[in-house]
Length: 194
Image (cartoon, rainbow, N blue to C red; front, side, top):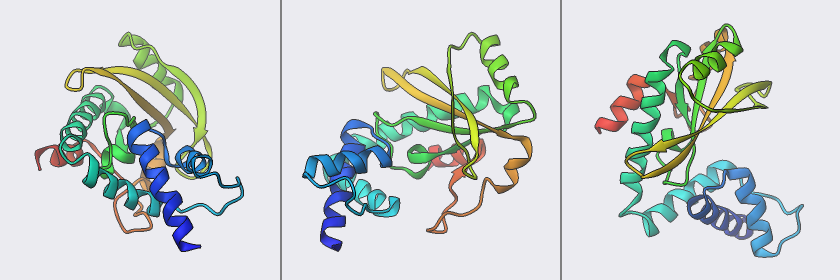
């Protein structure tokens, strides 16, 4: 069973890197690619992330570091534009597994969820609003933007997840591996300068 789980994780990792899929859809796609039934036990995200890192090291070592840097710099620009909402970067761009196909995920914290929408409108930014699961699994508003990344020469998806002002207290709770799951602008700046 472990061999099958590893095979699914490896196939999912390829979908993450080459197609820009998130882990959940990548695992489901891996089942289809491998011709496995939908109820086949799936690897956890930690297993997929390990395979993503291995795939990047084997096949993208020459391009991924530059793409990651460009994405982190682009994320920092958005964090500075939206600093009043106390942004935190998470996901693949924070964890270092992003490629040019990866989206940027920012957690924002404000008293009024509509204030971010108003700020984007004032800045002349088009966005699409939808509801997603938040930090604690509760529904939160997500504002999705297509933003041109100069260094990559293409549009990048930037997703702003709007959280209640007080939820910032739990934002730095360590993940299952003991890592910080996200970072503020100064932490992102440190990653860029490394």
